[in-house]
Image 1: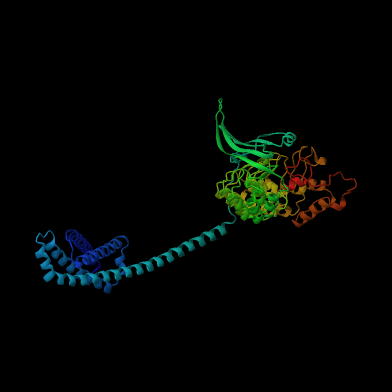
Image 2: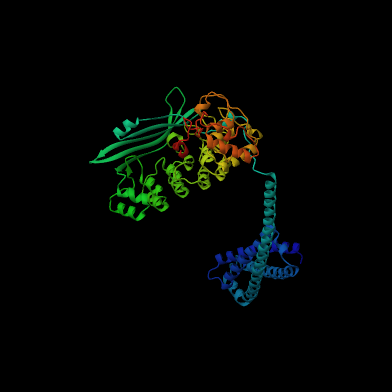
Length: 588
């Protein structure tokens, strides 16, 4: 039998088996005390019907008969032929008894004649069922093996394509990112820029022991969003408590009052000392001590210190994930700015837990700092990649990668200053703009990398810009990268900048702002800026130029430094109000 014949036989037998099963079921329903053989026939035909139907459907969907050899098809042919004879005979016997009114004669006929015949055909049906099971099993094994081979083939194709793609990327050089040619276009990408903030005077807040802050988060031509934080002292049965309101709302820019509450919380909590046992236990990360204080009713998960810091705040400071998890399960509230603490201490695991517990992913701190901003530039923070934290923010729909603080610094400015190349690449991949500019000197992030001697981020940013005109970039003073490097004492970057084509003899604008006192209202070159920083600095400048194959006059030894008018200090940071490097600027 060929495969086409086998398929046709199966289709016929499916119909026959279904008919036998239906007749057997009907007989069992009509007869009282029906013979045992009828039950067995009904069960066997049911199994055969579904076995044949499975083979038929599988062949239609996947062509599974292609998995059988010629000998196996012949075996199937014999089973199907025997099954057909048995099923047709049983149908004939069933038809003799269906609707038989002479029940006594029917039982006698069954006992003397049909009983033996049915038993024989029942044995044939059992053999057919066994054959079908074996065939289904063989088909299943071979189909699985074929699927495995196909998967292996597809995997090899995918791996070859990935390798080809990797090779092509390697041949193309650094990753290219399309950059805007106009800074005005880039500024439109800014989702938030710190604008206005209102609050009580510090003297009033201290005297009244309360706090009130209203911050304009962002605005456009149609609406404004504000964040309100208020903390008021209340005395309750001789104990001081705080009523804390934290909310944000949207107002429409219309003539009539039109506003919408976005989110918020209201807490009524105990005020405790910063020297309290519960605070010390949280700062140490001592989970057992915290648990016992709660059990003894000597503390509450809702407690806060006089400055509004919660227990979750102090537990995050201890960097204990288990303690923060315990406090949240005990009912400790998640404040609007709690995530900023996890960012400051660089704890991505705790940050994930806080976000799942309702922390505001887009919360702003003082001066417009975000959870991304706090990752870079604080005392005690080593220069290690923060890509895990940044990816956590991105995966939770953080929308303020392009936000700018009160000075116009974005997180990319801070990463360029205090971060690593991996941080830069991660931020650009999540959509952070390379072109956002600071408010004072109109710096893009790459200027910060030069000023703060971060050669790693400088090189990465230069590759990402991939702009032949980058060598001519200047700030509001007309200073190019070499001016800034000279003023900041970044001699390590001099060979790299010269290699990239930055003009050593470019003149700046004459200005009195953000320049050394001795160079006010003068148009100067980078060499003149280095000379103004003093004898030691100028000597290092000349050495760096020699290393890059450049010669400069005059030599340090040819200058009479006792009469030379110069300031003798480094400076030029975008965020410094005077010509020096303050520790505050370096740390913040």
